[in-house]
Length: 217
Image (cartoon, one colour):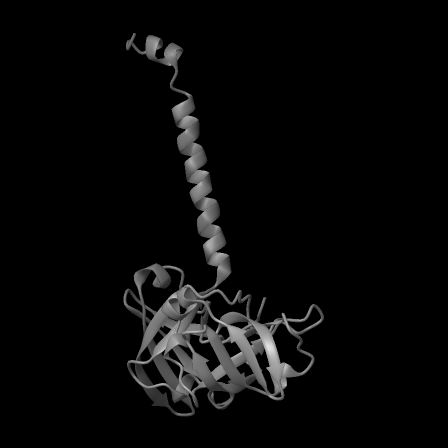
């Protein structure tokens, strides 16, 4: 599990898509890390498979490349990095699983005094879980939603977030990884089960006795 508080920005050394391997140059996230540990790369939970100096390697399956922006990375690209949350760590962001729900596209970046508004277009299946003042993860960054409608949502980026992450390095049209707040998905699942139980109960009440009493037999 992660929190969406980016620890550092790393740099891609090599993206070997044919072999399914990503080589990432980093520093802080390698402190105390060992083979098999999880590191979120642009919000995607990856397993460390090797470490050599300040470079770690992670296996990336074709499905992950298709469903995220990791396939677009090239040598020199910067990525947001976060180690899995320690049990005694601070919970600074929100619950982030590292399993993204899909991608969005940057529509606009617009400065307002010391902040920058970032507008992201995305599919309705992602938008349905986004609420104003709720949480959203963009490329592994825990952010508060400031606006949402049927086609997009907006976040406002403070200078600290801008300097510590890659978000404002993007330009309109760039693809970003999105993960919804898991709480909303759990609520939807529980409500769906409740509706199914009601339907099953109604169906179970229709038997031969019921049909006879109501003139069907």
